[in-house]
Image (cartoon, rainbow, N blue to C red; front, side, top):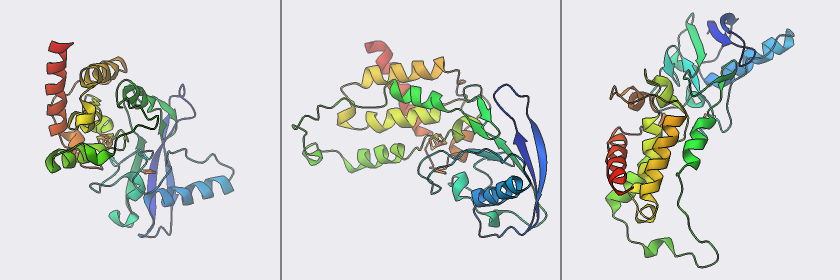
Length: 248
Ligand code: SF4
Ligand code: FES
């Protein structure tokens, strides 16, 4: 396939940035999207040009590092896949592909397609954990009975990889889907009950402090989430938050 790529180039956080056109030829439909960008970068380096900076690590849908906005959709046109799992067979010979970074006030651009998502880390640090004494007296996990339904729901919430596609897809740049997944994975389990009140209050406060927008129930986040995190987690977090505000 021969393709035209329109890629956001921005030297640093203070640079204005602009879309730049590139032509790329002989792209195999079996290549991943990131492999296609690797080929482009090799060509740019051979010409003495600066390669396009983009985030990636595992390249198998686990780490949440890859984060491209492709043809107006977070992680591109396929469903339930991350950018690194997207294949070039989703495109046709002659296509023009627009590639931009995830855009949100709370995700400032560092360079080209790389954004700073450390706001998510700070939300997680505000309460996304349980405090357990691991000094040799740890209980066997199976000694705490948990219903299959609760275990399944908690596991579904825990599949959130913190990629930020929900924020990038939301017209309000809301992080509610991410934060609610992190709250839910503990709210559904007995181990999460001890710190439940502080957890939800602190994580929601940190989310607001980071400058994420409000949720207006458009549902774009759920559609674009590569892990299929459900909006029911947002409803659960709202219930947890209301109940905690009465207790706290
Ligand atoms: S909820 Fe989905 S889109 Fe949002 S950070 Fe988690 S995995 Fe990514
Ligand atoms: S590079 Fe790890 S999820 Fe895409």
